[in-house]
Image (cartoon, rainbow, N blue to C red):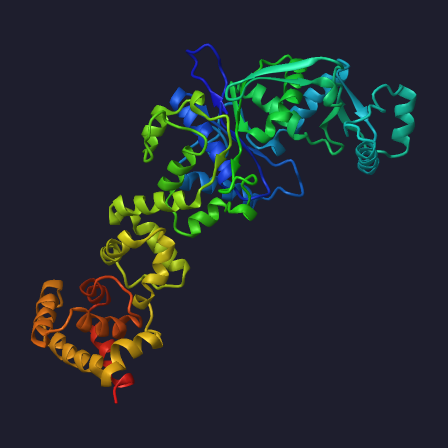
Length: 495
């Protein structure tokens, strides 16, 4: 939801409201990002409002996670939980009296009525309507109940909801800022519930009342809400509220275009992308380009550049496709170009989560570790597997690499390793240049390729034939541990 600044023609807010009960994936956080970019570009306010009136799905841990996702992505909010604001409270569960007040207003004005139909009865009627190929809208049987009928139903202990009275045979039209002029027929809608029997608002009623009272000027949401908008327009008119401007964002499809993005089709929660070591800068950049273009061929954009360029008229009407390969490419690019020091917090977290003891690594050594690997990483989540030899007391040796580089050819690799161990043990300083000088000398003396010298060392100290450059590997592991592992390999595989 976005609220324009006071000196413009409209007042209100563009920002984002969240239903609790599920983790956020790329599709819905993309919607929040577009709200945030629009609010920042327009100089308005970005609001977070928590929809927690569904008792079965609402848990505080979900609210905490939603807000944590926003903080991690760098999407700050001007009003909402934790920051407050003049139009709070910002949790719907704390606004129930407000909704009851406006439901009573609709009842008094004859724009709504009490409905005594049970969920089971409604379900049976919907089934019958579908079987008869009729629209499964409410059939209106409680619409004209007399006072006596109502008393009889209430005496039976039936719960009652408040249902909005939809006018028949009218067109409901609104101008969508993305999709253009959109029209619905009221006869397709049916009377709908605004206040449930437990006194809690439905989604439709809650958001309309809140948008009105919070002076929302722009409602930017997913295309899946398009069919809800005519209901909201009717409520807005009935309450005498100003109509905000609507913008519905086309869906994000799976990479093959066969369906809306979902966990089954590759969408992960923001929590999971974070766990896997994706960078928030890369995710924000990637999500901004899902269905929007800056008007040129730029792929990499900072937050400030996104804010400066963002406008709803550049949002595409067609669905965007989620391309995991592009996200990986973009994330790898961000890793390569960011200073290693800025990657330390994420690197330390993924290493720690993988059970690696990082206490022995100060920031300087962690920066060295990241700098060595960052050219080869797609996500920082790959770091624990690639660098695990640094965090174990005893490496696991890959048998095929031992056979190929140590014991093959009557133990030629072990012979070279024994010589290298002796030479490196005598080095006064454990530095890259010192090690490079002695290893190159051995290569020249033996007249062999450098790999014949480097690979036996690599297998001995990492357990495999794959690691960063041999000097970087020796430096990261350190003198004592490197020499100890070479000695261990000689004793274990020597004859």
